[in-house]
Length: 218
Figure 1 (cartoon, helix red, strand yellow):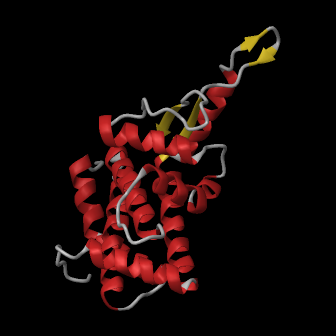
Figure 2 (cartoon, one colour; figure 1 turned 90 degrees about the vertical axis):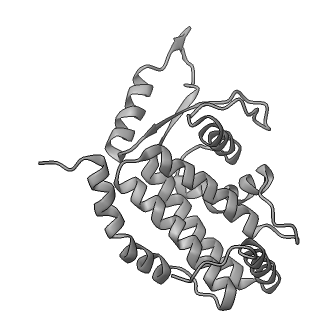
Figure 3 (cartoon, helix red, strand yellow; figure 1 turned 120 degrees about the horizontal axis):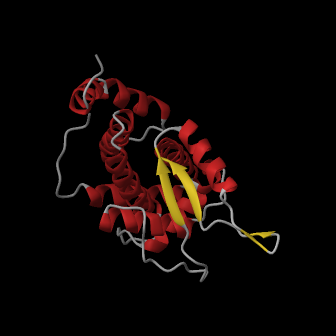
């Protein structure tokens, strides 16, 4: 007998402690309040893993895009700790786009983020900075399905006077997006430790993040 979604969630949640331990072991270590802040962020990474494992695709996307907002704000130079579209896109450009291995831009991911966060769907009215048309996103939850989607779109590509017209859509699997975000987060932590000025700013942002939220280190 297969498990219902709620039962799968319970089983996945029981594994969360080991997932947190794995997340801590694979990333750069910090000290003091910064380490506590990063450990609390590890719980967000764990929540993403739980959602993905339970096939809770939309909650996983919400957490991924919110996580990028947070990571962008933490990594950005300057004293102001605030999430913005520019910080989101700068972080994605540096730490995520190459890991996705496809022609998707930071601007398009920002539009995707706005669609998921604001209307809980893939579409967004966010205009691209380049002025290009906003491409539609098809989210899938398994790599095998992603490949089928890509093949189908290629087969359905319209032809105009013998010239192929590029499809105005692209496919992202929730798994590949989650993996790219997690790898980007770990790379960011390593980069932070290489630059003393960046590390000081990152530590200040961590302190500000948890100034009014006292959570125990996990």
